[in-house]
Length: 335
View 1: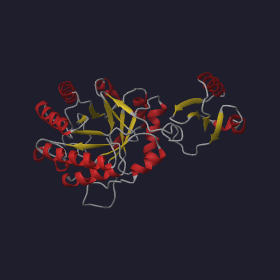
View 2: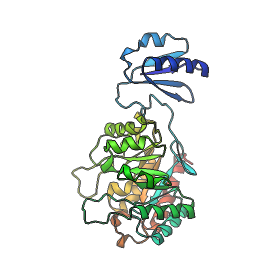
View 3: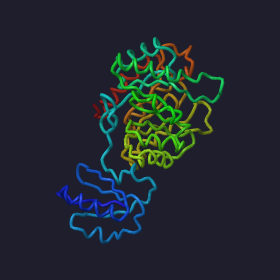
View 4: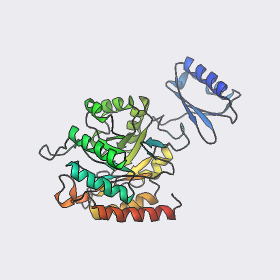
């Protein structure tokens, strides 16, 4: 349930109403938008008389929310959320580009790529230190050493770093990581999501290979219910019967997620297609359909990459993609 307050409602009046709601055994989610202030009532709202609430002088309207996700719901938070990440942000009119290797392989490799993607316009450096692999015999990442390499690249370039977590026990290793990524395989690892909800770090939540948008938003809700509202959603392709691509990129997810939720939505065209030559057209399509950013894999030697070389762009190709992204954003009126 939400209560939309009338313009001109004072902080004292909001505090009085919030206190009364809490006395009814409910939690309060306050959202101050550009036009309205919205109080979200979280919990068992069946005990609340909606007519009584709507009759209050400061209340403009009362609405019940049927969707099970509350904190992630745009009805709770009408304005777009903008998530601060180091010296940059994601959301609203701020377009983010996370670029870097699928796997951290060496310090020299990461440093070369970090400088290249920054020069091309990337706003964050992504790199895998812990790698979930389908085969137990594939390269599993450098783990803690990989995070240290990313931190050194961050110090040298100033780019905030994004890397994936596999286990809540690894959280102490992520103290200097700017964005913690939850991969597709862990989207419904609810115990991990609960732990991440107790942090205040931005969380990049990837859609699972066979999950619905509702399930993605419910996973976001797990994080937000713990008190961490810094969630970025990522569409990275879903599994279909098509075999020419690694997955099928669901671009319709972008406008639908924007309609349902206030959280930023980015696209990962690298994992979505699994084919380097398809990354550019899918990246441009993502910009056109309203995505708040991109996550693109870049490797200085894709042919010899230890992980996902087939979908990785060279630094030169990435620079070309970024130039086209800027052209599309400019045509659409973006900054």
